[in-house]
Image (cartoon, rainbow over all chains, first blue to last red; front, top):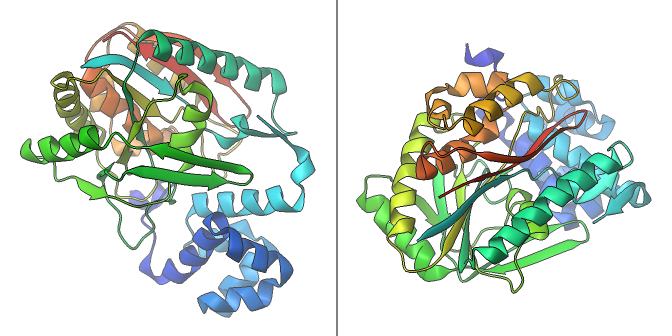
Amino acid sequence: MTEELHYRFPPASAYRLNRCLFALKSDDGFRARFLKDAAATLREHALEEEDAAAIVRGDRDGLLARGAHPYLVFMADLRLRMEREPVAFEFF
Amino acid sequence: MLVGAFACPHTPQLLARPGTEDRDLVLRVHAAFARVKRRLEACRADAIAIIAGDHVEAFFLDAVPALAVYVGTECAGTFGRYRYRFPIHEPLARTIVEAGIERGFDLFYTQEAPLDYAFYVPLHFTMPEPAVPIVPLHVNVYLPPQPTPRRCYDWGKALGEILRARPERVVLMASGGMSHFPGTDRYASPEFEYDRRLLDALAAGHGRELAAVTGEELDKMGNIELRTWATLLGAVGDAKADVYCYEPSWHHGNAVVEWPV
């Protein structure tokens, strides 16, 4: 049953991957380093190669299949887009 | 004492609007926020106790509290160019955690954790002038297994009793909802009819119905965040909701609601 939920228990095997997505979402310094040199910055989290490759590709489905939390994937991507294209936003 | 009860959405597109969002819709939600702000000023609130679901900002998988109270002196959060810092009403926060534990709720507390946008997006638009201190109340909504809606309702009932016994004039605010599915294949197809039916039930004074839904149903309907509403409803009971607005965007049901207390 729980495997059909949109938001599932985050598998412990994906802890490092989720930790890295959390940093991309919430750590401004890490995100800035990632935008300069993605591959080198991802090594800080000692990710498996496939995890790192999926982050660099922005491969949402691949990340979800590897146990990434959907919200972390979503907001890490939004925060990266906000820095890459800041003029596309109207700030209130 | 409890002097007001409100629910507000917090989707960050209301703060930083990308071109994908309908500007008029965003402004209509802002107008409803402005009504809340005027009401908070009319209530002469001394503090805002704000119930929100952390978006994996204060708490990562290192420690996942089901229900938590922020009991620091101040709290801060950042979102791009936005920088927030709010004083905490520490005596009220401490009473909530102490009295809550006395009543059988094993609350987690923190004195230092980043503030999530679920707290500061509604406060950005509704904080009265002059500003008042806040008490952030966390309900886990994004990291399963979450507390059941029944548990949230029961905690809210205790919370309401605790707030009513206090000398301060306290406004209770639930942040979150309605239907949305960030990061999933359902992102562009929320369950707006579910939202509308629920708002009708709340307007008819059937708040306790939200305590009876299952966590599975909330997930299925894109409404995992309504645990914050269930908590507030525990405090206000079956009062008839005044729905200021329901504005469904292409990915999010934005509702602003007040309950008489």
